[in-house]
Image (cartoon, rainbow, N blue to C red; front, side, top):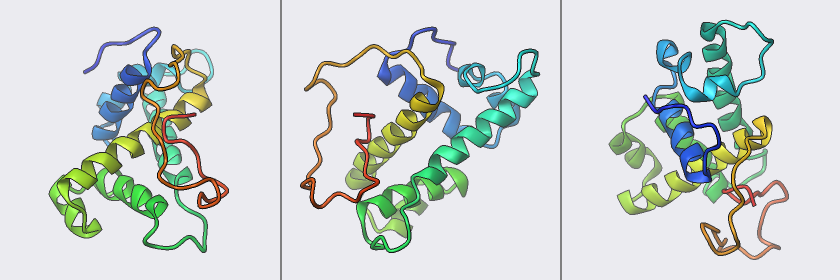
Length: 160
């Protein structure tokens, strides 16, 4: 279990999200996870209920990355969503997800890192975690798409 971090760096927050996703359906793990302290809940809420709220927040973050109807099925947006869906919601092993997505291990690793950044960014926005700011150029991910090619709901995967 990762210890509670009072003011996590963006990397630490992403690692907390990754850890929670790896234990997505383990309620005993989620209820004691540091992210469970960040979920919106009434004071006095039990740790078991906070674990359920954390599960729902993680599922909602993944669901919010689902591309809208009409998005090409071979788009990066769909690949990112399917990667998260297969790996965490359906619980497939990496090798099985690779096969279903027809990705190389290297491409999977890149896409997985961006997908985790996207989920962490959504949760950070929701919970307003005080993360230290990152100067431009440090951890900034450039898109290969021009602004005109980006779908209207496109977001920087790391919250920029």
